[in-house]
Each structure stands twice: as C-alpha cells, then as structure tokens.
Amino acid sequence: MTNIDNNTPMEKMTIGGDIYESGNAKEFKTGDWRSLCPVWIEEKCTQCGLCFPVCPDDAIPVGDDQKRTNFNYDYCKGCGVCAQVCPFKAIEMKEEGK
Amino acid sequence: MGIRERLSGNEAVAVAMRQINPDVVAAFPITPSTEIPQYFSTFVANGQVDTEFVAVESEHSAMSACIGAEAAGSRAMTATSANGLSLMWEMIYIASSLRLPIILNLVNRAVSGPLNIHNDHSDAMGVRDAGWIMLFSENNQEAYDNTLMAHRIAEHPKVKLPLMVCQDGFITSHSIENIELLEDDKVKEFVGEYHPEHYLLNKKEPIAIGPLDLQAYLFEHKAQQAEAMNNAKEVIAEVAADFEKLTGRKYSFFEEYKLDDAEIAIVCMNSTAGTTKAVVDKLREQGVKAGLLKIRMFRPFPAEEVAKSLEHLKAVAVLDKSDSLNGMGGALFEDVTSGMYVSGKSVPTINYVYGIGGRDTKETDIEKVYTDLAEIAKSGKAENPYRYLGLRREGE
Image (cartoon, rainbow over all chains, first blue to last red; front, side, top):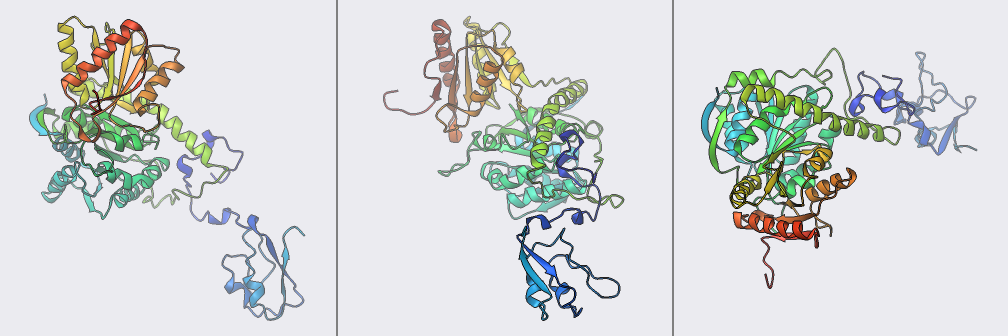
C-alpha cells in the first residue's frame, strides 16, 4: 500500500486512489516546492521557543527536552514566518538551490 | 409468477426502490422525477422501508449525500431530471471516480433554456462521458426491471461504478401502463446484500477516500475506470441472464426488433422505440422490410455488437433526442457511426435530431424516416446526414 509511487503500474494501484491505512498525510512530502529555505544558526539560537509554534506545518522538530533541532525540510515550504519571529536572527532565509 | 399491476413509470421505479430497501435515499424534487422520491418518502413514512431519507436543499447536496453514504459502506439511491442533474454535475464525476456504486433514476427531460420541462435526452447526453453506466428504458416495465438489476451490476467487484437508469419524462414517467412486478422476497433475494470490501465506517480499517491525485496518479485511476466500464459489459450480461431465469424477461445490450431480415432500420432509445415498433409492424404488412435496433446499454456502448447487428442493412437512421449542436450530429449517431467505421462496416447512415423539448413524435414522423431510408437504400447515397425530424421550417 505505502509502496505505491510514480513507477507503480495501474493494475497495482488501489481503485480511486483509496488509502487503506490511517495517519498517512506525513508520507506526502510537501517540502519539494519550497523556493526559500530557512537555515538554522545554532550558535545564535537561545532556545527561546518562539519559532516552532508559528510554523504552519511540522517542520521544526522539538525534543522531549523542549529544545528545537534542525529543520525537517520534508515539510518546510519556506514561508519564512519562523525567521520573522526570531528575535536573535538565528534563522536566515536563503534562496533554494544556492 | 409475478404480480400484475398498472403503474406509471415513476411509480414503478418507486416500487422497485421500496423492494430494494436501500440504506439511504437523498433527493431534491424536480419535475418530472419528483414523484419518485415523493412516492418513496411515503414508503418511509409508512415504515415500509428502513431507509434514511435525506431531504436535501439541492441536487448537488443530493449527490453529495449519496457519495457520503456509499463511501460509508451503505447503499444509496436518488432520482432527478434535467437541470437537477446539471446541478449534480460536479458530484457525478466524484461519484464515478471514487468508484461508488450509487443508483440514480434519471427521468429524461430537456436541459433548459429557454425554459422547458418536457422530455428529451439532453440531460443524459450531458453526462455521457462521466463514467456512469447508463441503461435506457422503453417503458415502465423496463425502468422497473433495469432498477432491480442495477445494484448487482454497479456493486460487482469488477465494476464498482455508479449507474443511472433512464426513462422518458412524462411519456413513460407519468403514463400508467400494465406492468408485472416481482414479489418483495424475490427482489430481496435477487438484489442481495451489499458488503463492500473497504468502507469508511469500518473501525477495523481506517481508510482515506478521494485523496490528492496529481500528475503521477490520475491517469492510471482514469484508466482503471475505463477498464471497469469494459468489465461492466460482461456483468450486465450475467445479471440479465439471471434476471431472465427469474422473470422470463430477456434483456440484452440492445433489442433487435424484426432486424434479422430487415433492409432498412432505425436506431433509437427509450419510448420512441415503442412508436417505432408500431410503424415497423405496419410497414411489414405492406411488405417493407423495416427493422429497429433499440439501445438499452448506452454506457458502456456496445459499438462492435451494434456494428455487427447493422452490417447487413441497406440504410440506417439513428434518432437522437438531443442535439449535440456540434455541426456533425447527435451523440448516438456519433457512437453508432464510429462503431461501424472502426469495425470496417459501411452502411449509408443518417441522423435525425427529433423530439426536442417534448415535441411529440408520431407514427407519421417515424414513417417519414422509413420513407427516406427506402430512397437511400435505392440510391446507396446518404446525403445531408444531419437532419431534423418534426422541425418547422419554411417551405417544408
């Protein structure tokens, strides 16, 4: 089921595109159409906790210790909201591919 | 064997729905199909069915409610006509692409405008490429029988497509004729229960229906629909064979009426076939070798079989109760002639657009078609193939 991709022949695809399991939205990587890319500058980051609540997706992972780690680019669409709210300039937006 | 009754086409369909006892009926009233949900809601009120009747605020919602009900794992039915079907249009495609075997009774009527509520086939022709199986019915008996066969066709694992049963608005929907009904228990046994493999209300298997389907996938899913439509032919034949065993009434993809030895023939659908049969009988008495091919299964279209059935004729007229306004002829004409061409059969064939907006089609009109066909058979030439029947024109 989860093995359906753009090489799967029609005979092996589920009818109507039905998905016979739950919690599958995370398998849809939505970060591939990003044009601006946030870069986390760890040494400037104070772990103030302002960035991850504003992320419209789930692209800033936070551990059990309440500290953020690097971006999950599978889902980051490059909206730049996190860079805007960061008081310490610890997130820089760079053009994708440069 | 059977119960003799006299019912209108709408009553016949409502009785079939009562006997089928679907889980959900969602409908919005529109002439001339209004009576179907009206009669059916009486059955609901009287406790004769267990159906959840959803009185929606529009046809778009009616089809949406049917989609939700079918996706949940239940049987859903509805009925509509003309502009009601037009308002369903968006959801008609959703229903077929999600492979939900909803059954819709379409009482054929002109799609306005200018404003008209009477019979023609422009509503059905507007959804002919929407991925629905489409069965046409000459009279109340056929509308009833097609409805009884509908679920077994649509729900078959090799098909899983929605199905519409068509009949002519007013001409059959509001005319009371003799009919033979099946006993309730026999219908129940014939139709059977619906147990879909996957459905939304199955708590053991949480599923998603209708997800995003972009460039990498939609093409294959459409091809699956096309394959299901091909599979439907075999299933329609199987179900008809079982139905014949039960009732003695035989249903093929199309009916051939005195066609075997005919030289000239008409191809048409729904109630006009009845008028044509009367004319064929009259002409046969005069020694004219006239015949009729009445299409029952319009989608999937039996192109090869129709071509084979018509190949021996000297001239054919295809009657379209809807004008495609395309500069080349009606939808049925296109299907028949392309079927002939692809099969390598060449018979002079002409098209008549007729009966638009409920214009009466009389025996004399049909006689005129056969007179034209006799001339074409003699000359071998089908000139001016895109014609009108019963249209007022200067100098005619």
